[in-house]
Image (cartoon, rainbow, N blue to C red; front, side, top):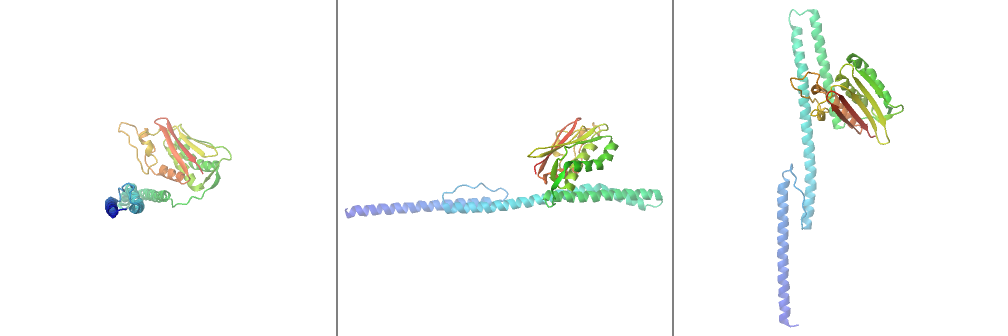
Length: 313
């Protein structure tokens, strides 16, 4: 081969090598620039950018690792934010619910200390103060229990229990309430049907639902409890023929202290007022969820409401 040709080939190869090095450098500079842009966007932890494939292997791996770390930080941030919001909402609920009984206690205390009050009046005022104190005590304890349930820190001691025993115990405690309201409290539970539940807390959940049904069923109505079981789940149904719940209120009845709206032209007993205030249903739902179960409600204004509970454990 001629020396001139060899020299030409060497020059071409050297030129090609220089071009490749320049291209590689530009690719690296582009990859680094993209990575810097990505890091800039990542600083806003509330809106994590989507990860993209990068042609440069090392920078691509680095971007992937950054994405993982920031994802974990974002998750922690979100969790902390939700906890703070939950505590703020809880404190707002407690403050709002305690305002009325505290005002009543203040007024009754002033009346109690007023001159010229008879002994009979003093006893009446003292009794009313005690009623309000009992109400506040119950409210605080219930809210603390609900917060423990929602946080998953309240242990459920599950054991196989005949459902009929739980229903019988609930009926014995609510029979007086049902009789006073002239509401028929009926139960039809198959013999031998067992559920794996915490006796105390599951009874509390069912009691709260049944109590709501009785409270919102007119004289002469009924509340019926039934159950069935398959290999997959146990279904408990609580049905009444009471006021019913408005469609716009139905999705919210398990919310803590939810209050349904009704127009001024409606009578107080109309469905807009049904299941309006309280934490009984919110607690019932949380207890059932802590038993790996679900609860749903279906209702029609003026015809009644059906609560369906399913346990899968």
